[in-house]
Image 1 (cartoon, one colour):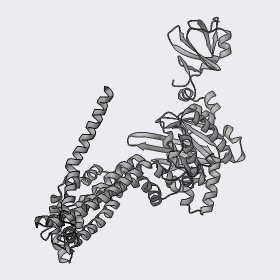
Image 2 (cartoon, chains in turn cyan, blue; image 1 turned 180 degrees about the vertical axis):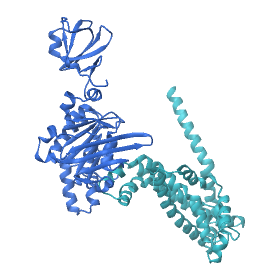
Image 3 (cartoon, chains in turn green, purple; image 1 turned 180 degrees about the horizontal axis):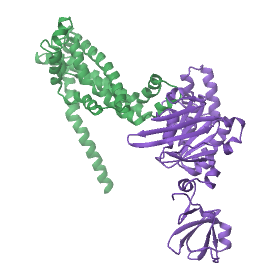
Image 4 (cartoon, chains in turn green, blue; image 1 turned 135 degrees about the vertical axis):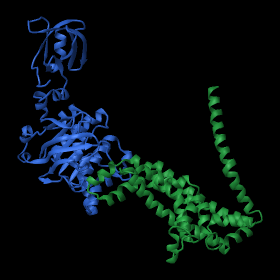
Length: 270
Length: 339
Protein backbone atom coordinates (compact mmCIF):
# COMPACT_ATOMS: atom_id res chain seq x y z
CA UNK A 1 0.00 0.00 0.00
CA UNK A 2 2.76 2.42 0.89
CA UNK A 3 4.36 1.95 -2.50
CA UNK A 4 1.05 2.74 -4.15
CA UNK A 5 0.73 5.90 -2.12
CA UNK A 6 4.26 6.92 -3.10
CA UNK A 7 3.46 6.42 -6.73
CA UNK A 8 0.25 8.41 -6.42
CA UNK A 9 2.12 11.23 -4.80
CA UNK A 10 4.79 11.20 -7.48
CA UNK A 11 2.28 11.28 -10.34
CA UNK A 12 0.22 13.90 -8.53
CA UNK A 13 3.23 16.19 -8.26
CA UNK A 14 4.15 15.61 -11.86
CA UNK A 15 0.58 16.35 -12.95
CA UNK A 16 0.48 19.64 -11.05
CA UNK A 17 3.85 20.80 -12.40
CA UNK A 18 3.14 19.84 -16.02
CA UNK A 19 -0.47 21.03 -15.89
CA UNK A 20 0.66 24.42 -14.65
CA UNK A 21 3.21 24.68 -17.47
CA UNK A 22 0.69 23.56 -20.08
CA UNK A 23 -2.11 25.89 -19.02
CA UNK A 24 0.02 28.97 -18.58
CA UNK A 25 2.83 28.56 -21.11
CA UNK A 26 2.44 25.82 -23.67
CA UNK A 27 -1.22 26.28 -24.67
CA UNK A 28 -1.05 30.05 -25.36
CA UNK A 29 2.18 29.73 -27.33
CA UNK A 30 0.78 26.82 -29.35
CA UNK A 31 -2.39 28.74 -30.14
CA UNK A 32 -0.33 31.67 -31.43
CA UNK A 33 1.47 29.24 -33.67
CA UNK A 34 -1.77 27.86 -35.12
CA UNK A 35 -3.43 31.23 -35.53
CA UNK A 36 -0.44 32.52 -37.47
CA UNK A 37 -0.82 29.95 -40.22
CA UNK A 38 -4.63 29.97 -40.18
CA UNK A 39 -4.78 31.63 -43.58
CA UNK A 40 -1.75 29.91 -45.05
CA UNK A 41 1.85 30.98 -45.27
CA UNK A 42 1.18 34.17 -47.27
CA UNK A 43 0.05 36.80 -44.79
CA UNK A 44 2.58 36.04 -42.03
CA UNK A 45 5.42 35.86 -44.53
CA UNK A 46 4.37 39.17 -46.03
CA UNK A 47 4.26 40.79 -42.61
CA UNK A 48 7.69 39.74 -41.46
CA UNK A 49 9.34 40.43 -44.81
CA UNK A 50 7.84 43.91 -44.94
CA UNK A 51 10.45 46.71 -44.57
CA UNK A 52 9.11 47.64 -41.14
CA UNK A 53 9.20 44.03 -40.02
CA UNK A 54 12.75 43.52 -41.23
CA UNK A 55 13.88 46.74 -39.68
CA UNK A 56 12.37 45.72 -36.37
CA UNK A 57 14.21 42.41 -36.54
CA UNK A 58 17.60 44.04 -37.17
CA UNK A 59 17.04 46.76 -34.60
CA UNK A 60 16.32 44.09 -32.00
CA UNK A 61 19.55 42.33 -32.88
CA UNK A 62 21.47 45.63 -32.61
CA UNK A 63 20.06 46.35 -29.15
CA UNK A 64 20.82 42.82 -27.95
CA UNK A 65 24.20 42.79 -29.68
CA UNK A 66 25.36 45.89 -27.83
CA UNK A 67 23.61 45.42 -24.49
CA UNK A 68 24.54 41.79 -23.82
CA UNK A 69 28.33 42.01 -24.45
CA UNK A 70 28.56 45.20 -22.37
CA UNK A 71 26.58 43.62 -19.55
CA UNK A 72 28.73 40.50 -19.75
CA UNK A 73 31.98 42.43 -19.27
CA UNK A 74 30.47 44.58 -16.55
CA UNK A 75 28.80 41.57 -14.96
CA UNK A 76 32.00 39.56 -14.61
CA UNK A 77 33.90 42.59 -13.28
CA UNK A 78 31.16 43.44 -10.79
CA UNK A 79 30.94 39.81 -9.63
CA UNK A 80 34.72 39.70 -9.08
CA UNK A 81 34.63 42.95 -7.10
CA UNK A 82 31.63 41.87 -5.02
CA UNK A 83 32.94 38.40 -4.22
CA UNK A 84 36.69 38.95 -3.92
CA UNK A 85 36.99 42.41 -2.41
CA UNK A 86 35.98 44.06 0.83
CA UNK A 87 35.03 47.70 0.75
CA UNK A 88 32.66 50.23 2.21
CA UNK A 89 29.36 50.40 0.36
CA UNK A 90 29.55 46.83 -0.93
CA UNK A 91 26.06 46.03 0.38
CA UNK A 92 24.69 49.11 -1.38
CA UNK A 93 26.32 48.14 -4.70
CA UNK A 94 24.93 44.66 -4.29
CA UNK A 95 21.42 46.06 -3.85
CA UNK A 96 21.71 48.56 -6.71
CA UNK A 97 22.53 45.75 -9.13
CA UNK A 98 19.12 44.22 -8.40
CA UNK A 99 17.25 47.47 -9.12
CA UNK A 100 16.32 46.48 -12.70
CA UNK A 101 14.59 43.40 -11.25
CA UNK A 102 12.61 45.51 -8.81
CA UNK A 103 11.67 48.55 -10.89
CA UNK A 104 8.95 48.33 -13.52
CA UNK A 105 10.40 48.66 -17.04
CA UNK A 106 8.05 51.57 -17.73
CA UNK A 107 9.53 53.46 -14.80
CA UNK A 108 13.01 52.69 -16.15
CA UNK A 109 11.95 54.20 -19.49
CA UNK A 110 10.60 57.30 -17.77
CA UNK A 111 13.80 57.66 -15.75
CA UNK A 112 15.85 57.59 -18.95
CA UNK A 113 13.54 60.27 -20.41
CA UNK A 114 14.20 62.43 -17.35
CA UNK A 115 17.94 62.21 -17.91
CA UNK A 116 18.30 62.25 -21.68
CA UNK A 117 14.99 63.75 -22.88
CA UNK A 118 14.52 67.22 -24.38
CA UNK A 119 13.50 68.57 -20.98
CA UNK A 120 15.85 66.21 -19.17
CA UNK A 121 19.00 66.71 -17.13
CA UNK A 122 21.62 65.89 -19.77
CA UNK A 123 19.34 65.85 -22.81
CA UNK A 124 19.51 69.54 -23.90
CA UNK A 125 23.34 69.60 -23.79
CA UNK A 126 23.57 66.39 -25.80
CA UNK A 127 20.98 67.51 -28.35
CA UNK A 128 22.82 70.86 -28.79
CA UNK A 129 25.88 68.79 -29.65
CA UNK A 130 23.97 66.76 -32.17
CA UNK A 131 23.58 63.64 -30.06
CA UNK A 132 20.07 62.33 -29.83
CA UNK A 133 19.47 59.62 -27.28
CA UNK A 134 15.73 59.59 -26.79
CA UNK A 135 13.53 58.56 -29.74
CA UNK A 136 16.52 56.93 -31.39
CA UNK A 137 18.65 53.81 -31.19
CA UNK A 138 21.05 54.91 -28.37
CA UNK A 139 18.12 55.37 -25.98
CA UNK A 140 16.73 51.96 -26.83
CA UNK A 141 20.13 50.36 -26.32
CA UNK A 142 20.43 52.13 -22.95
CA UNK A 143 17.00 50.84 -21.93
CA UNK A 144 17.96 47.31 -22.99
CA UNK A 145 21.22 47.48 -21.04
CA UNK A 146 19.34 48.68 -17.97
CA UNK A 147 16.79 45.87 -17.90
CA UNK A 148 19.25 43.07 -18.68
CA UNK A 149 22.04 44.23 -16.38
CA UNK A 150 21.72 41.95 -13.31
CA UNK A 151 21.74 38.53 -14.98
CA UNK A 152 25.44 37.95 -15.60
CA UNK A 153 26.40 39.35 -12.17
CA UNK A 154 23.86 37.20 -10.38
CA UNK A 155 24.76 33.99 -12.22
CA UNK A 156 28.53 34.53 -11.86
CA UNK A 157 28.69 35.46 -8.17
CA UNK A 158 27.69 32.08 -6.69
CA UNK A 159 30.09 30.23 -9.00
CA UNK A 160 32.95 32.53 -7.99
CA UNK A 161 32.08 31.99 -4.36
CA UNK A 162 32.01 28.25 -4.80
CA UNK A 163 35.38 27.92 -6.55
CA UNK A 164 37.03 30.06 -3.85
CA UNK A 165 40.33 31.79 -4.46
CA UNK A 166 42.80 28.97 -3.85
CA UNK A 167 43.15 28.20 -7.55
CA UNK A 168 43.93 31.88 -8.16
CA UNK A 169 46.46 31.90 -5.34
CA UNK A 170 48.05 28.75 -6.72
CA UNK A 171 48.33 30.42 -10.13
CA UNK A 172 50.01 33.46 -8.60
CA UNK A 173 52.59 31.35 -6.73
CA UNK A 174 53.28 29.64 -10.07
CA UNK A 175 54.20 32.99 -11.57
CA UNK A 176 50.98 34.13 -13.24
CA UNK A 177 50.14 37.84 -13.14
CA UNK A 178 46.61 39.14 -12.52
CA UNK A 179 45.57 39.07 -16.15
CA UNK A 180 47.02 35.60 -16.80
CA UNK A 181 45.34 34.30 -13.66
CA UNK A 182 41.98 35.71 -14.73
CA UNK A 183 42.25 34.50 -18.30
CA UNK A 184 43.69 31.03 -17.68
CA UNK A 185 42.23 30.09 -14.30
CA UNK A 186 39.30 32.23 -13.14
CA UNK A 187 37.40 32.62 -16.40
CA UNK A 188 37.53 28.92 -17.41
CA UNK A 189 36.35 28.02 -13.92
CA UNK A 190 33.31 30.33 -14.05
CA UNK A 191 32.54 30.04 -17.76
CA UNK A 192 29.30 28.08 -17.45
CA UNK A 193 27.94 30.49 -14.87
CA UNK A 194 28.78 33.41 -17.14
CA UNK A 195 27.29 31.63 -20.15
CA UNK A 196 24.06 30.97 -18.28
CA UNK A 197 23.90 34.65 -17.29
CA UNK A 198 24.47 35.66 -20.92
CA UNK A 199 21.62 33.43 -22.05
CA UNK A 200 19.22 34.86 -19.51
CA UNK A 201 20.29 38.43 -20.32
CA UNK A 202 19.83 37.76 -24.04
CA UNK A 203 16.37 36.35 -23.54
CA UNK A 204 15.41 39.32 -21.41
CA UNK A 205 16.90 41.84 -23.87
CA UNK A 206 15.15 40.22 -26.84
CA UNK A 207 11.73 40.50 -25.27
CA UNK A 208 12.01 43.90 -23.59
CA UNK A 209 8.93 45.99 -24.22
CA UNK A 210 8.12 48.57 -21.55
CA UNK A 211 11.32 50.54 -21.14
CA UNK A 212 12.17 50.47 -24.84
CA UNK A 213 8.63 51.50 -25.70
CA UNK A 214 8.84 54.65 -23.56
CA UNK A 215 12.17 55.89 -24.94
CA UNK A 216 11.64 54.84 -28.55
CA UNK A 217 8.81 57.17 -29.59
CA UNK A 218 7.64 54.13 -31.58
CA UNK A 219 8.33 55.36 -35.08
CA UNK A 220 7.60 52.49 -37.51
CA UNK A 221 10.60 51.48 -39.54
CA UNK A 222 12.89 53.61 -37.34
CA UNK A 223 12.59 52.96 -33.63
CA UNK A 224 10.56 49.79 -33.52
CA UNK A 225 12.00 46.59 -32.13
CA UNK A 226 10.30 43.23 -32.65
CA UNK A 227 8.18 43.34 -29.48
CA UNK A 228 7.02 46.87 -30.36
CA UNK A 229 6.33 45.75 -33.92
CA UNK A 230 4.19 42.89 -32.63
CA UNK A 231 2.11 45.21 -30.52
CA UNK A 232 1.81 47.77 -33.32
CA UNK A 233 0.58 45.19 -35.81
CA UNK A 234 -1.84 43.89 -33.20
CA UNK A 235 -3.39 47.30 -32.46
CA UNK A 236 -3.70 47.92 -36.22
CA UNK A 237 -5.72 44.71 -36.55
CA UNK A 238 -3.01 43.09 -38.66
CA UNK A 239 -3.26 39.91 -36.65
CA UNK A 240 -1.32 37.73 -39.09
CA UNK A 241 1.61 40.12 -38.94
CA UNK A 242 1.47 40.30 -35.17
CA UNK A 243 1.42 36.54 -34.82
CA UNK A 244 4.18 36.04 -37.38
CA UNK A 245 6.49 38.50 -35.67
CA UNK A 246 5.62 36.96 -32.35
CA UNK A 247 6.71 33.60 -33.70
CA UNK A 248 10.03 34.97 -34.91
CA UNK A 249 10.55 36.39 -31.43
CA UNK A 250 9.55 33.12 -29.83
CA UNK A 251 11.93 31.18 -32.08
CA UNK A 252 14.83 33.48 -31.18
CA UNK A 253 14.03 32.96 -27.51
CA UNK A 254 13.79 29.20 -28.01
CA UNK A 255 17.22 29.06 -29.65
CA UNK A 256 18.61 30.98 -26.70
CA UNK A 257 16.89 28.72 -24.17
CA UNK A 258 18.03 25.54 -25.88
CA UNK A 259 21.60 26.76 -25.88
CA UNK A 260 21.13 27.37 -22.16
CA UNK A 261 20.14 23.76 -21.64
CA UNK A 262 23.19 22.72 -23.60
CA UNK A 263 25.34 24.81 -21.26
CA UNK A 264 23.66 23.33 -18.23
CA UNK A 265 24.33 19.81 -19.43
CA UNK A 266 28.00 20.61 -20.00
CA UNK A 267 28.16 22.13 -16.56
CA UNK A 268 26.96 18.95 -14.90
CA UNK A 269 29.40 16.90 -16.98
CA UNK A 270 32.35 19.10 -16.03
CA UNK B 1 59.66 37.43 22.69
CA UNK B 2 59.52 34.34 20.55
CA UNK B 3 62.72 35.08 18.79
CA UNK B 4 64.28 31.67 18.48
CA UNK B 5 67.32 30.83 16.42
CA UNK B 6 68.03 27.34 15.33
CA UNK B 7 71.48 26.12 16.11
CA UNK B 8 71.45 23.67 13.26
CA UNK B 9 71.52 20.58 15.43
CA UNK B 10 70.88 17.35 13.58
CA UNK B 11 70.09 19.23 10.41
CA UNK B 12 73.54 20.76 10.02
CA UNK B 13 75.23 17.41 10.26
CA UNK B 14 73.66 16.18 7.07
CA UNK B 15 75.62 18.24 4.60
CA UNK B 16 77.92 21.17 4.16
CA UNK B 17 75.35 23.34 2.34
CA UNK B 18 72.86 23.17 5.21
CA UNK B 19 74.59 25.85 7.24
CA UNK B 20 73.13 28.71 5.19
CA UNK B 21 69.77 30.18 5.95
CA UNK B 22 67.14 29.26 3.37
CA UNK B 23 64.27 31.27 4.81
CA UNK B 24 64.52 33.96 7.50
CA UNK B 25 61.55 35.53 9.21
CA UNK B 26 62.17 38.53 11.48
CA UNK B 27 59.66 40.05 13.89
CA UNK B 28 56.63 39.27 11.75
CA UNK B 29 53.27 40.50 13.04
CA UNK B 30 49.91 39.96 11.43
CA UNK B 31 46.42 40.78 12.59
CA UNK B 32 43.04 40.08 11.04
CA UNK B 33 40.68 42.71 12.43
CA UNK B 34 41.08 42.39 16.17
CA UNK B 35 42.61 38.91 16.04
CA UNK B 36 46.38 38.82 16.39
CA UNK B 37 47.43 35.86 14.27
CA UNK B 38 51.19 36.44 14.58
CA UNK B 39 52.64 38.31 17.53
CA UNK B 40 56.21 38.97 16.51
CA UNK B 41 57.62 35.76 15.05
CA UNK B 42 61.27 35.23 14.14
CA UNK B 43 62.60 32.04 12.61
CA UNK B 44 65.55 30.78 10.61
CA UNK B 45 65.02 27.80 8.35
CA UNK B 46 68.29 26.18 7.20
CA UNK B 47 68.84 25.83 3.48
CA UNK B 48 67.74 22.46 2.16
CA UNK B 49 66.02 21.40 5.39
CA UNK B 50 62.64 19.81 5.92
CA UNK B 51 60.85 21.79 8.62
CA UNK B 52 57.42 21.34 10.20
CA UNK B 53 55.31 24.15 11.62
CA UNK B 54 53.37 22.38 14.35
CA UNK B 55 50.59 23.81 16.47
CA UNK B 56 46.90 23.69 17.32
CA UNK B 57 44.42 25.42 15.03
CA UNK B 58 44.52 29.19 15.43
CA UNK B 59 48.17 29.09 16.51
CA UNK B 60 49.25 31.10 13.47
CA UNK B 61 51.16 28.35 11.66
CA UNK B 62 49.23 28.62 8.39
CA UNK B 63 49.36 32.41 8.51
CA UNK B 64 53.15 32.26 8.93
CA UNK B 65 53.41 29.96 5.91
CA UNK B 66 51.20 32.28 3.85
CA UNK B 67 53.29 35.29 4.88
CA UNK B 68 56.41 33.45 3.67
CA UNK B 69 54.65 32.71 0.37
CA UNK B 70 53.48 36.31 0.01
CA UNK B 71 49.81 35.30 0.07
CA UNK B 72 49.43 37.46 3.20
CA UNK B 73 51.20 40.76 3.79
CA UNK B 74 52.65 41.08 7.32
CA UNK B 75 51.79 44.22 9.32
CA UNK B 76 55.37 44.34 10.58
CA UNK B 77 58.60 42.41 10.11
CA UNK B 78 60.69 41.03 7.28
CA UNK B 79 60.85 37.85 5.21
CA UNK B 80 64.07 36.80 3.47
CA UNK B 81 64.35 33.92 0.99
CA UNK B 82 67.84 32.77 -0.08
CA UNK B 83 69.31 36.00 1.23
CA UNK B 84 66.96 38.34 -0.65
CA UNK B 85 64.41 40.49 1.20
CA UNK B 86 61.04 39.54 -0.34
CA UNK B 87 58.75 41.30 2.17
CA UNK B 88 57.12 43.54 -0.44
CA UNK B 89 57.40 41.10 -3.33
CA UNK B 90 54.25 39.52 -4.81
CA UNK B 91 53.85 35.72 -4.65
CA UNK B 92 54.22 35.73 -8.43
CA UNK B 93 57.87 36.79 -8.14
CA UNK B 94 58.93 35.00 -4.94
CA UNK B 95 59.96 31.68 -6.44
CA UNK B 96 57.99 29.64 -3.94
CA UNK B 97 56.11 26.43 -4.58
CA UNK B 98 52.89 26.30 -2.56
CA UNK B 99 50.73 23.25 -1.94
CA UNK B 100 47.24 23.76 -0.51
CA UNK B 101 45.33 21.47 1.84
CA UNK B 102 42.50 21.11 -0.66
CA UNK B 103 44.88 20.76 -3.63
CA UNK B 104 43.71 23.89 -5.52
CA UNK B 105 43.82 21.83 -8.70
CA UNK B 106 42.89 23.65 -11.90
CA UNK B 107 39.76 21.61 -12.52
CA UNK B 108 39.40 22.51 -16.19
CA UNK B 109 42.93 21.33 -17.06
CA UNK B 110 44.33 17.85 -17.43
CA UNK B 111 47.04 16.64 -15.05
CA UNK B 112 49.62 17.40 -17.70
CA UNK B 113 48.46 20.99 -18.16
CA UNK B 114 48.17 21.51 -14.41
CA UNK B 115 51.78 20.47 -13.90
CA UNK B 116 52.97 22.47 -16.90
CA UNK B 117 51.09 25.64 -15.91
CA UNK B 118 54.03 27.49 -14.37
CA UNK B 119 56.28 26.61 -17.30
CA UNK B 120 53.72 27.80 -19.81
CA UNK B 121 53.46 31.09 -17.93
CA UNK B 122 57.24 31.32 -18.23
CA UNK B 123 56.89 30.87 -22.00
CA UNK B 124 58.97 27.69 -22.17
CA UNK B 125 58.91 25.76 -25.42
CA UNK B 126 56.42 22.95 -25.90
CA UNK B 127 59.15 20.32 -25.99
CA UNK B 128 60.75 21.63 -22.83
CA UNK B 129 57.41 21.66 -21.01
CA UNK B 130 56.54 18.14 -22.19
CA UNK B 131 59.90 16.77 -21.06
CA UNK B 132 59.74 18.43 -17.64
CA UNK B 133 56.13 17.38 -17.05
CA UNK B 134 57.00 13.84 -18.00
CA UNK B 135 59.90 13.77 -15.58
CA UNK B 136 57.81 15.20 -12.74
CA UNK B 137 54.90 12.83 -13.31
CA UNK B 138 57.35 9.96 -12.98
CA UNK B 139 58.72 11.50 -9.80
CA UNK B 140 55.26 11.70 -8.20
CA UNK B 141 54.16 8.31 -9.58
CA UNK B 142 51.45 9.76 -11.79
CA UNK B 143 52.90 8.58 -15.03
CA UNK B 144 50.03 7.41 -17.21
CA UNK B 145 47.62 9.90 -15.64
CA UNK B 146 48.75 12.81 -17.84
CA UNK B 147 45.48 13.11 -19.72
CA UNK B 148 43.14 12.67 -16.78
CA UNK B 149 41.25 15.54 -15.20
CA UNK B 150 41.63 16.23 -11.47
CA UNK B 151 38.06 15.03 -10.89
CA UNK B 152 39.19 11.59 -12.08
CA UNK B 153 41.93 11.33 -9.46
CA UNK B 154 41.84 10.27 -5.81
CA UNK B 155 42.72 12.77 -3.09
CA UNK B 156 46.23 11.41 -2.71
CA UNK B 157 46.81 11.54 -6.46
CA UNK B 158 45.53 15.10 -6.64
CA UNK B 159 47.89 16.15 -3.90
CA UNK B 160 50.82 14.53 -5.67
CA UNK B 161 49.80 16.36 -8.84
CA UNK B 162 49.71 19.63 -6.89
CA UNK B 163 53.19 18.87 -5.58
CA UNK B 164 54.50 18.17 -9.08
CA UNK B 165 52.94 21.43 -10.25
CA UNK B 166 54.70 23.34 -7.49
CA UNK B 167 58.03 21.64 -8.21
CA UNK B 168 57.82 22.25 -11.97
CA UNK B 169 58.94 25.86 -11.65
CA UNK B 170 62.00 24.80 -9.60
CA UNK B 171 61.13 26.95 -6.59
CA UNK B 172 63.66 28.22 -4.05
CA UNK B 173 61.41 26.92 -1.30
CA UNK B 174 58.52 24.50 -1.12
CA UNK B 175 55.65 25.41 1.23
CA UNK B 176 52.92 22.90 2.10
CA UNK B 177 49.82 23.94 4.04
CA UNK B 178 48.41 20.88 5.86
CA UNK B 179 49.17 18.86 2.73
CA UNK B 180 47.75 15.61 4.07
CA UNK B 181 44.94 17.10 6.14
CA UNK B 182 42.15 16.18 3.73
CA UNK B 183 43.30 12.59 3.19
CA UNK B 184 42.35 9.44 5.06
CA UNK B 185 44.73 7.87 7.56
CA UNK B 186 46.33 5.20 5.34
CA UNK B 187 46.98 7.51 2.42
CA UNK B 188 48.29 10.12 4.83
CA UNK B 189 50.92 7.76 6.23
CA UNK B 190 51.92 6.66 2.77
CA UNK B 191 52.34 10.21 1.52
CA UNK B 192 54.30 11.12 4.64
CA UNK B 193 56.97 8.54 3.90
CA UNK B 194 56.88 9.50 0.28
CA UNK B 195 57.36 13.23 1.00
CA UNK B 196 60.40 12.45 3.14
CA UNK B 197 61.96 10.39 0.34
CA UNK B 198 61.08 13.03 -2.22
CA UNK B 199 62.86 15.62 -0.11
CA UNK B 200 65.94 13.44 -0.04
CA UNK B 201 65.88 13.41 -3.85
CA UNK B 202 64.98 17.02 -4.55
CA UNK B 203 66.58 18.82 -1.58
CA UNK B 204 64.59 21.99 -1.83
CA UNK B 205 64.09 23.94 1.43
CA UNK B 206 60.69 22.71 2.56
CA UNK B 207 58.27 23.87 5.24
CA UNK B 208 55.04 22.03 5.93
CA UNK B 209 52.25 22.95 8.29
CA UNK B 210 50.55 20.32 10.42
CA UNK B 211 48.57 20.01 13.62
CA UNK B 212 49.50 16.34 13.93
CA UNK B 213 52.55 15.90 16.18
CA UNK B 214 53.16 12.35 15.01
CA UNK B 215 53.24 13.52 11.40
CA UNK B 216 55.66 16.33 12.26
CA UNK B 217 57.97 13.98 14.15
CA UNK B 218 57.84 11.33 11.46
CA UNK B 219 58.62 13.60 8.53
CA UNK B 220 60.53 16.68 9.70
CA UNK B 221 64.19 17.22 10.50
CA UNK B 222 63.28 20.31 12.46
CA UNK B 223 60.01 21.19 14.18
CA UNK B 224 58.76 24.66 15.03
CA UNK B 225 56.07 24.48 17.70
CA UNK B 226 53.63 27.39 17.57
CA UNK B 227 50.93 28.48 19.95
CA UNK B 228 48.80 31.60 20.16
CA UNK B 229 50.69 33.52 17.45
CA UNK B 230 54.13 32.81 18.90
CA UNK B 231 56.88 30.25 18.49
CA UNK B 232 57.20 28.12 21.62
CA UNK B 233 60.24 26.08 20.65
CA UNK B 234 62.34 25.04 17.69
CA UNK B 235 64.26 21.79 17.61
CA UNK B 236 64.68 18.30 16.26
CA UNK B 237 61.85 15.85 17.03
CA UNK B 238 64.03 14.25 19.70
CA UNK B 239 64.94 17.60 21.31
CA UNK B 240 61.32 18.59 21.58
CA UNK B 241 60.29 15.32 23.14
CA UNK B 242 63.23 14.98 25.51
CA UNK B 243 63.87 18.63 26.34
CA UNK B 244 60.62 20.57 25.97
CA UNK B 245 61.13 24.18 26.97
CA UNK B 246 57.71 24.63 28.52
CA UNK B 247 54.51 22.91 29.57
CA UNK B 248 52.74 23.63 26.29
CA UNK B 249 55.41 21.97 24.16
CA UNK B 250 55.67 19.00 26.49
CA UNK B 251 51.91 18.49 26.33
CA UNK B 252 51.67 19.04 22.58
CA UNK B 253 54.38 16.69 21.37
CA UNK B 254 53.34 13.78 23.58
CA UNK B 255 51.03 12.63 26.32
CA UNK B 256 51.66 13.88 29.85
CA UNK B 257 50.42 13.21 33.37
CA UNK B 258 50.16 16.02 35.86
CA UNK B 259 51.31 15.23 39.39
CA UNK B 260 50.96 18.45 41.32
CA UNK B 261 53.28 20.88 39.54
CA UNK B 262 55.23 18.05 37.99
CA UNK B 263 54.71 16.75 34.48
CA UNK B 264 55.67 13.23 33.59
CA UNK B 265 55.32 11.10 30.47
CA UNK B 266 53.21 7.90 30.81
CA UNK B 267 56.22 5.70 29.95
CA UNK B 268 58.33 7.37 32.65
CA UNK B 269 56.20 5.99 35.48
CA UNK B 270 57.22 2.66 36.95
CA UNK B 271 54.59 0.32 38.35
CA UNK B 272 55.75 -1.57 41.49
CA UNK B 273 53.85 -4.29 43.26
CA UNK B 274 55.24 -3.34 46.72
CA UNK B 275 55.58 0.14 48.28
CA UNK B 276 59.14 1.36 48.90
CA UNK B 277 58.55 4.61 50.80
CA UNK B 278 58.86 6.95 47.82
CA UNK B 279 55.98 5.49 45.82
CA UNK B 280 52.37 6.58 45.53
CA UNK B 281 49.51 4.12 45.86
CA UNK B 282 47.04 3.72 43.03
CA UNK B 283 44.31 1.41 41.85
CA UNK B 284 44.10 0.09 38.27
CA UNK B 285 40.93 1.32 36.55
CA UNK B 286 41.53 0.05 33.04
CA UNK B 287 44.10 -2.01 31.15
CA UNK B 288 44.04 -1.34 27.38
CA UNK B 289 46.03 -3.58 25.02
CA UNK B 290 47.27 -1.47 22.10
CA UNK B 291 49.43 -4.06 20.40
CA UNK B 292 53.04 -3.81 21.48
CA UNK B 293 52.25 -1.46 24.31
CA UNK B 294 49.75 -1.57 27.12
CA UNK B 295 48.12 1.46 28.59
CA UNK B 296 47.21 1.28 32.26
CA UNK B 297 44.83 3.87 33.67
CA UNK B 298 44.95 4.40 37.41
CA UNK B 299 43.27 6.41 40.11
CA UNK B 300 45.47 7.63 42.99
CA UNK B 301 44.41 7.61 46.64
CA UNK B 302 43.73 11.36 46.44
CA UNK B 303 41.35 10.83 43.48
CA UNK B 304 43.68 12.06 40.71
CA UNK B 305 43.88 9.98 37.57
CA UNK B 306 46.90 9.16 35.46
CA UNK B 307 47.99 6.88 32.64
CA UNK B 308 51.03 4.63 32.48
CA UNK B 309 52.48 3.09 29.34
CA UNK B 310 54.25 -0.21 29.55
CA UNK B 311 55.01 -3.15 27.29
CA UNK B 312 52.73 -6.10 26.80
CA UNK B 313 55.39 -8.42 28.18
CA UNK B 314 55.77 -6.38 31.37
CA UNK B 315 52.01 -6.20 31.92
CA UNK B 316 51.64 -9.95 31.43
CA UNK B 317 54.60 -10.94 33.60
CA UNK B 318 53.25 -8.95 36.51
CA UNK B 319 49.65 -9.88 35.81
CA UNK B 320 48.37 -6.31 36.01
CA UNK B 321 44.60 -6.35 36.18
CA UNK B 322 41.53 -4.30 36.89
CA UNK B 323 41.06 -3.24 40.52
CA UNK B 324 44.59 -4.19 41.56
CA UNK B 325 46.43 -1.90 44.01
CA UNK B 326 49.90 -0.95 42.76
CA UNK B 327 52.65 1.52 43.71
CA UNK B 328 53.89 4.15 41.31
CA UNK B 329 57.34 5.69 40.96
CA UNK B 330 57.50 8.60 38.51
CA UNK B 331 60.85 9.20 36.85
CA UNK B 332 62.19 12.21 34.91
CA UNK B 333 59.44 14.55 36.08
CA UNK B 334 59.62 18.10 34.84
CA UNK B 335 58.55 21.33 36.40
CA UNK B 336 58.33 24.52 34.37
CA UNK B 337 58.57 28.05 35.73
CA UNK B 338 55.20 29.69 36.01
CA UNK B 339 53.34 26.41 35.88
